[in-house]
Structures are given as structure tokens and as C-alpha cells.
Length: 89
Image (tube, rainbow, N blue to C red; front, top):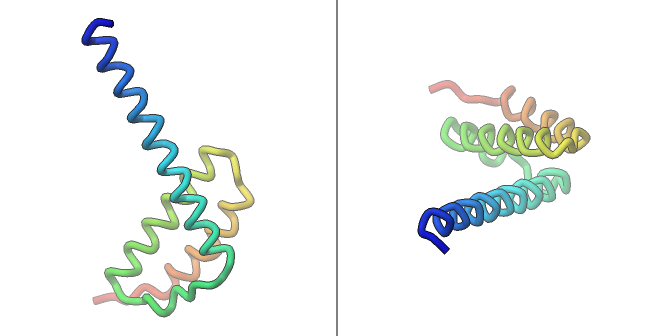
């Protein structure tokens, strides 16, 4: 195999692995959010809320791409709760 072909295969593998990791993280986060075992109000504060919002938005983006819209709806409800509690500094 030539070097260009090997680089291309390594890049494809890397993208596949990254995609699988992203999917696994989104699903594990969804399990936590949907179980309602986490109370986001315990983490309210500007820095935490920004990270929580980013994670929830990333999850919505992922599940939109995979056409799992029912998950998006549930996540969106939680996102609205978090956004309603943002603390301005």
C-alpha cells in the first residue's frame, strides 16, 4: 500500500472512532438525563450552566442527525429548565 492510501485509511478509522465515541457519550448522557436521577439545580452557577447547556445542545444536535427526535424533545425540555435558571454575573 502506498503512503497516501494508508493516511486515508487512518483518517477514516479516526473519523469512525470519533463518531462512535460521540454516539456513546450522547447515549450515556441521555440515559442520565432521562432517568431524572440528576437535578441540574444542584449545579446552577454560571460556569456549570454554560457547560450543561453546551452538553444538552450537543446531544440535541447528535440525536437530530440520527433522527431520534423523541430524545431531542425530552432533552429540549431539560435545556429550557436550565436556561431559565441562568445566573448573571
